[in-house]
Figure 1 (tube, rainbow, N blue to C red):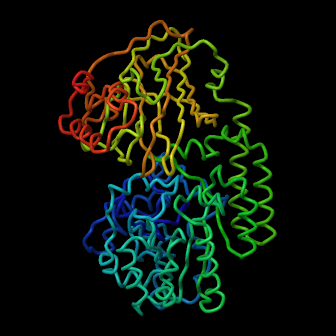
Figure 2 (figure 1 turned 45 degrees about the vertical axis):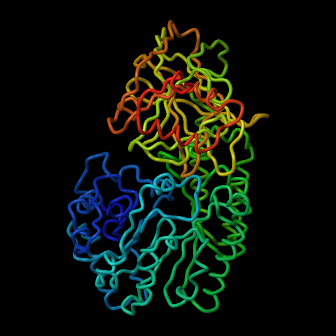
Figure 3 (figure 1 turned 180 degrees about the horizontal axis):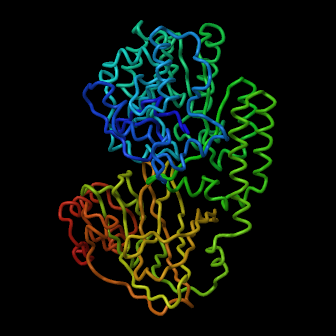
Amino acid sequence: MLKCSASWYELNISAPDNIVSACCYYSGAKDPWLDEPVDIARYWNSKHMQEIRRINSGKVSKEPNGCSDCFYFVNRTSGAAYYDFSQPMPADLSEHQAANWKKAADDWRGGRVVVQSTPLRIYVNFGFTCNLACTMCHQVPRRGENRRQVKADVVLAWPEALRSALDVTVIGGEPFALPEAISFIRRFIADPEFEQVQLTICTNGTVHHKYWNLLKQKRKLSMTISLDSIGPGFEKIRVKGKWLLVEKNILDFLHLSRTERPDWTLQTNALILKTGIPLLPEFAEWHARHGITTSFYDFINSRGTEDTYFRENVLFNPHVLADMPEWENYFARAISTFRKAGLSIAADTLDHYRRRLSAAVTAEAQAPDSNEDLRGVNAWESVFAAGGPMDSAISLYYGTADGSVRYEADGRSLKFTKTSMGDELTTPFAEVKVAKPGTGLRLVMAWKEIKGDQRPVHSFVQDQAGREISVRRRFASTKSGSQETLIGRIGPESTTLRLVFRPVGDGESRMPDEVRLDIEASGVERLQERAGHATAATASNGKAQGQAIWIVHNFMKKALGPSPPPKPALRDLVGRIKRKGQRIVESVLSA
């Protein structure tokens, strides 16, 4: 039985991820992207693409496989298709497009593994560069170090495949912030061979107004705007974005489509975040008023976005809705508005998400996380404690993938100055002799101030084998700032524990001003800090890929004194740590 049609429909390219596949969602082996022109068949009929077709034509029955639990279909209603080959051939196709569509439909119906067609859709992620810093975007933490772009010349070397496609989709990053994407768009629009091919641009909507003269030259143009909320919700989620500008750009595009360019189309897509839920009714009313369709979906957790995932992903952290008892009303009002406006895709996908969320909330109420019981524990024994700006007796190891130092003092606290995917600060390990399995653990962190675009670091507890202790996270505002509490249980296999702090986003990540790790007193026989030098393994999750620098954190208080020294002095200190890569003790620093 045929399942998903993606591998007969789409060639999906991403230079920064170095992959070519049938879609963004396949989790199996993929082909690497090459920076030089090659025959498109090398990708389109590769062994990995053939494997996807085997899976979806029933020739591979092994589960799980790269299509199992597909994120695309999890976010779609029952019966949804990636591309529906059961529908008639689209109208207004060129001779080349029509011939290719018939071949693709025949390949699909026959379940062919080696196909005769070329892709009906060529989807190109040109790079990660973007002018925004969206809180949940998995590209943001990686884009500073991963600047690889798809070269326009390489894709344009497929003129026959391009003119035979129904659609060519350009995405980033932000396409209008990527030089190679802009070059491709210009040349694609200018070439009369591609006049019948729809050009789809996936954008954040903040920049395309600068290219009206160029865009007006394309007859078949589609714009997909990433829009998760409106007004203040939009600006909190899409950091550096301005709602009034995006709204104007969208409405100007609509005006042109309704007055000058009847073949133009526009739609939005929306991630569900806690921030946007109270604004769902207004979000729906805005789309209904302007006749714009949208669809809703979930977002994944990835390194560098954990702070947003645990605070904002209500589907996988339903307990964060405890302070929003009216959440169902927001969904119901929005769904009703979409249905009355005839925006069925928006209504269906939002209702699908609502039902999933309702099930998660119900499951949480009926079988609460076992860690919740620990909230009533009153007797705790401290493992680590730092009162004040993390400058007491806690020492920290600095692990990094490339040896660079990317943290500094911020007043009398610490912050990561940018995100590098290999960076982390860790405490020494503490030996824990657990008297009974399931002994409780509690980590409490407090921030007195998060400045501007700073984000709190992501923190977790790790044992000697590199395992992250499973916890329930709770967030609260306090009179002096904010607090994050992690509650979990220690398994019998965990004999030593440490704290790990990692940067998030692409800017500054602030370390907590206060931190305390406690163990349930009734379940612990002995706690003892284990001294020793950091190794490359302990500094980088057991991967011997970096260096570890011992930082005796108490020096910060003495070195800084009542007021911070000039920045050059701090840079000199950091430089010495970076060059020597050795244990820096207080006596040396004080001398």
